[in-house]
Amino acid sequence: MDNRNIDIAGVAISPDHYIDGRRVASAETFELFSPIDQRLLGRVSEGLDEHVDAAIRAAAQAFPAWSALDAATRKPYLDRFAAEIGKRADALCQVESNDAGVLLSRMRHGVVPRAMLNITWFAEHALTLQQRPIETEQAHHRVRHDPAGVVVIITPWNAPLMLSTWKLGPALAAGNCCVLKPPEWAPLTCSLLADAAHAAGLPPGVFNVVQGTGARAGAKLVSDPRIARVSFTGSVPTAKWIAQAAGANLVPCSLELGGKSPFIVLDDADLDNAAATGALMYRNAGQVCLAGTRFLVHERIAERFIDTMRGYVERLNIGDPRDEATEVGPIIHPRQVERVNGFVERAVAGGARLLWGGQPHPFGAQYYQPTMLTNLQQHDEIVQNEVFGPVLTLQTFASDEEAIALANGTDYGLGGVCYGAQDHAVAVADRVRTGFIWVNSFGIRDLAAPFGGIKRSGIGREGGDWSFEFFCDVKDIVVPKKPFRASFSQR
Ligand code: NAD
Image 1: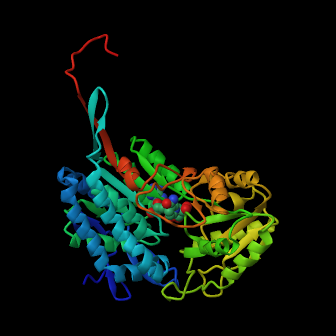
Image 2: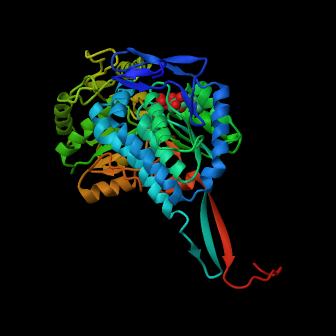
Image 3: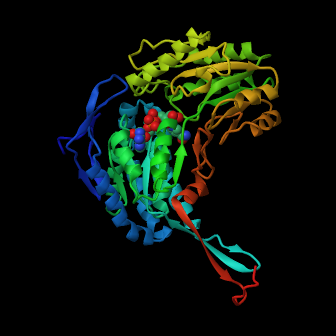
């Protein structure tokens, strides 16, 4: 075992890059701490210019051979990749729980199975890509989905394994070669992904990992003119920077960004169900892009709804994410705790009223009480900006029109939740301007469905065919049905 490796619960994790099928150490490293108890987990290689250059070169060199395979030949590689992820399930659970603070139970039952499916589902779906002819009166159009080239994937810390595989699956299945830059606050499960890819026999250069900070490794990767695509999930300010850097080379970006999604409770909603789902918005300590964080509740039922939801929130178990009974774990980083607390303090100073929470949680320095604020104006900072912590807001409305206006009254447009009698809720959901919205439910995700946001929540869609539209160059090969004879009078 390499003595540079980081040890978490007996799992050895390489802190280094994975480039061209080999581990590469850096002369510079950065410290990594656990959100659970702030203990130093180890030091991780910083991605310097030379590593970015080597990774893109390796991916570009691997591209001709990998892209020349048909999807059916690539599929067994990817199925083996998923199987190797499965063999590492316990390690991945322990490591992401310690590194990112994600609940161990959620890793085991949700994230790891989904990470495997992210690889196998897209490998299977890629088989259908080249079989979609368009027949017109004049011509037979053979529509090809050709791999684009070197794809840069950049992911955030709140769901590193899930989001990395969500992008790697379709990118690799389509025949691209990838460079993944994991989040510097939670980079370790992406290192284990490299081990899985290696064990699965993915050819060198097809999948590379460059560790490092966003400002150095990330910025250098997205600015490189040799890349063909950037798939990014993260915050709005970073996305603007990336879009400019990649845009300078006309490199297309898929941007999955933050949210300030409405959670609408209509007057004919099943209040108990809505309140139970409401408490789920504290999952992952509220560090979930798609959570409904702005509660919009009909004034007639608001008091009853608040009391019911308070009951669910009071029963939440806050603590160590490795404990099976825990339902809400820590916030990722001391800076993020400060940010969350700052939002709450400014809101209260500005006249907001706390319905519950509002303080750091006694369990530890990086834990925060599930919090709900009310007595708010639509233009308030806490209503308009993403907190990305366990802090929700509640406003009331008197009519559907008002609910829809409030729901649409921010610059974000990622998701939403709408509780009410089915037809009523669907009619309201139709008019909420977001990339998706759940009716009388939350969190149902299917890999065939589109995912992404509008307005400041992002550009583009991933999932199903949409992932392939992004990761591929779509080409139309036009073959006329009748003999073609050139003529200037032809339209
Ligand atoms: P972030 O934007 O700070 O960082 C995301 C990634 O970008 C990290 O890997 C970081 O190293 C990298 N990065 C930072 N600066 C960069 C630069 N100049 N060039 C290239 N890369 C750079 O976001 P975060 O704080 O890690 O994550 C939280 C954000 O992510 C929230 O806004 C959340 O809503 C969003 N998010 C969105 C989704 C979605 O699917 N829409 C999912 C999860 C999280």
